[in-house]
Image 1 (spheres, helix red, strand yellow):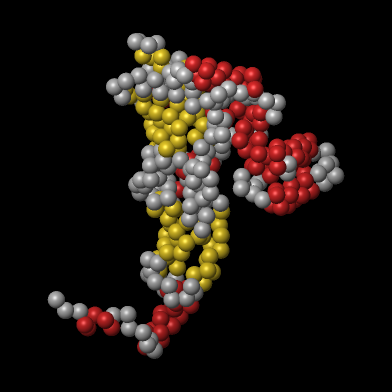
Image 2: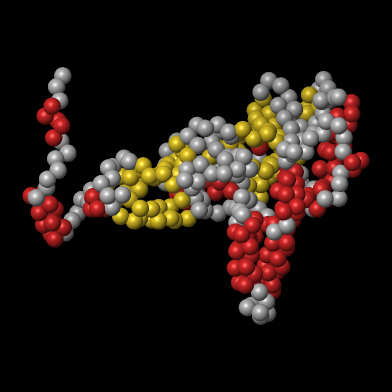
Length: 348
């Protein structure tokens, strides 16, 4: 199966990879009713969606099938048929990334190479694999909100000419920068890179950050001494976002509230990567305090999400009506709290 034919059953059912069986069943029932042919007579697109929903549920509702699907991705059916030769010593598939191959033939070729390596003890070769590392540094600034979480999904392919920006590292390895939008980095994306006369497809997993490095083995320069190719290292460049920024592993945003909302408390809508959520602002909150929305932040490479920190900023209106001014004057005249009372005790 080609990588472009891969069906993301979790996305089809609209659930996360950590969804419980009850969550999967609930989503399936909702979507099956939505796309059922009886509810959409003559609608071929709805009929196709109904088949996909049933196919996804058939796999994710079966613990054994789901386990294979989670481990082997698009090759889970082939995995159930056993591997050629029944396995080999020293070949470990526990943390194997099967999503890196564009076809099953590519995977078989690599697999045979691993068997040969395990049998001979030879660690050299030009097999292809990806290593994902994260740099926790934060990108600079806020701008271009439109380049944030809008557009582009994991199933979309973006073409990028890496050869123009590749630089020598003093060996047969090469380095290149690969720009991503926040949507691409959050959800994961498949990128098509042009390496001179060669085009390759690289899978960027969800949760990439500024400075994350993707290692593509065997796609560097040719070493004239041993006639083997080095590796290609892709450094992620994450475009700045107008609302979100990183605070370590967490996301951070600033949300303004009015003075009366800060004094009396309020319920406000806050954008998150998943959409807006309602947040309760406690009465008496101070400007600069942060509210923590757990697991509403950035994906971790090994699963799960970080938190979203909502920094509250009290907004002071410049233009107010006569009625508003009257009430503010009444509040000032009857105010009992002095926020500067401690200043009289300040000494050098």
